[in-house]
Image (cartoon, rainbow, N blue to C red):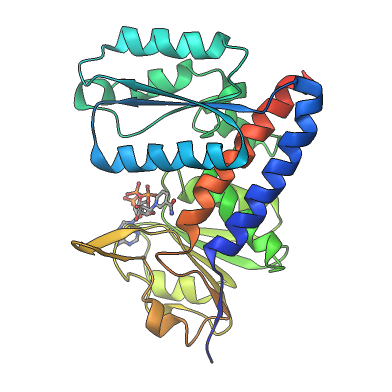
Length: 287
Ligand code: NDP
């Protein structure tokens, strides 16, 4: 059997089309398109690529985008003052601070994220939004997990009543996607580095999410026949070679549906950032 390929570009396009449509409808109320501010400190090459892609996505949808590139030497106080300015700006609906921060700011990351107005926190990392997600209330939800859930819905893959297994318990992927699956009535198990007999737990899953950060960690013997396998991992194994957390070639012979890497979940993340920016703008209008 060869699994159905869940191509990120197909779902990302649908998410972006919907975001643009909603933004255009919102423009009649706001008198402008939604606005996203991206703050980057220092010159991390990978972060610069991500930030450029976010700007491009804004441009493609006609959103307003503000790139605030601050020097490596920026102090915590200066960064907090910048966030305060963006919180107060009427033109900006969404704010994100690109992570990782330079070493001298990384230790204050929690304080910096908490300074963002939760209503503009399009990354969904603010404790208020995390709390709302856990409580099952409307929240701005981290983009990668939210994008995966949207993909399941658009692909018509049922979640309610199904067994889901999430490998990884990070705050940006593993935990939020577990709560989102639970909110959609899956029975969710979270695995991590201390889980005993992880393969047996994974094999129970109808929906298996890998967010481990280890190349080809999920092998075919860990996958139930016909399961949906979502590979969040992005691992660079050679100069130009990216692989996921799933042994794609072997697992696709067992799974019912599978996301590739590259070309899978990665594309959903920025599309969902656009959707979150629209959601943030909407929440301000409704307020
Ligand atoms: P983290 O490193 O923060 O978390 C990894 C998780 O995997 C931890 O919970 C860890 O367990 C668990 N883990 C590590 N080794 C094992 C093991 N041997 N057995 C079981 N569990 C293990 O990573 P992230 O969640 O931030 O990211 C995961 C992957 O997803 C990475 O490859 C990252 O690059 C990618 N990613 C992709 C995105 C996208 O847009 N597609 C966005 C964000 C991330 P423990 O808690 O016990 O240490």
